[in-house]
Length: 81
Image (cartoon, rainbow, N blue to C red; front, side, top):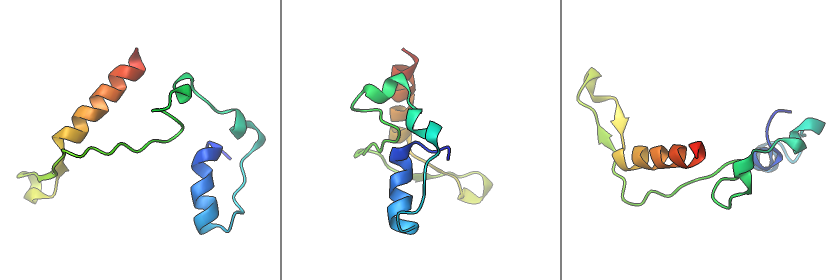
């Protein structure tokens, strides 16, 4: 009931045989940046030059990707404006 209908559509079709429903208020959920073609209710960014690196602390279990982190910072700067 709380998901934006565009987010709900995928799990409904692929896991719940189209039976997931949105509440009446869910269709009204929107943010000003949803009007941008780059920032709908959900977005995937393909960061082609990113590389995952394993950390050295805590047994090397941590993974980081500086290029992806830089993209996130730029997106947040855009949204802040």
